[in-house]
Length: 274
Image 1 (cartoon, one colour):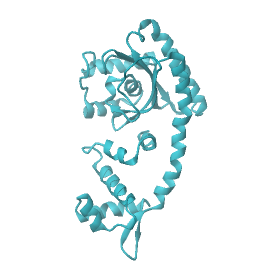
Image 2 (cartoon, one colour):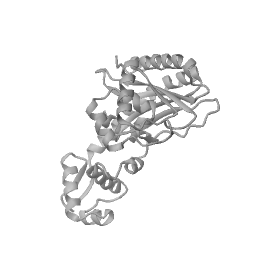
Image 3 (cartoon, one colour):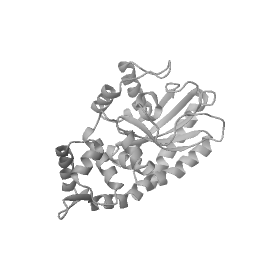
Image 4 (tube, one colour):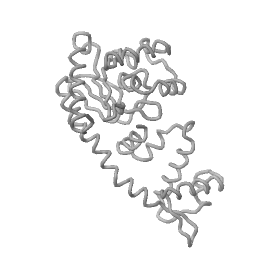
């Protein structure tokens, strides 16, 4: 699932933004590999080990080790005459497949538009990437509302309906790992910051089938979300409706939940996920 959303994010954002987004403290080897590939992509000529190590601040043995690993999987290729490297055909092949991944968002997008038109509120699509919620698509509302999220925005999942809708349906050990890494940081007075309370919240979400962010990320805003599942019933994303508390309240809750579930069903049929 994580690879799926890495590719999805690479579609939405520039590859450099993907690298900037990745945390220096995690996946250190992947970060370095991205640095090497990003540097090589900007060069007109083949690149040597010495040039790479000096440009990126790696020692030569580390640079050579990474190049050997990348060469083994075809991501870079070595010119045996000059002993220098260039990007390999594997990247070209992967690049040709990106539109297929982009088309997943494109296929979901009209359903999000229909939902936004129906409820006249902000609608979002998100996935879980590097232990955080990443916004993959967003339909703005024509009504007055100020929400600070945008495509590519990322945040710990515990304080959003989008994140909770995903966490509630992934393996418990993955939830525990994410909580160890991200914790339960405070955003508003309603943010859930106690682990036992949060785990109880996930249990409630599994039972009810939807998640609610009740001003837990931003005061004055509520968000309702449902998970999206693949054909194997594994959660792969979530969709939500967001708006001010004056418009998202107990009297509108059931209608919005039903609208989300209907949209999920339509997306499943259009992507053949049923």
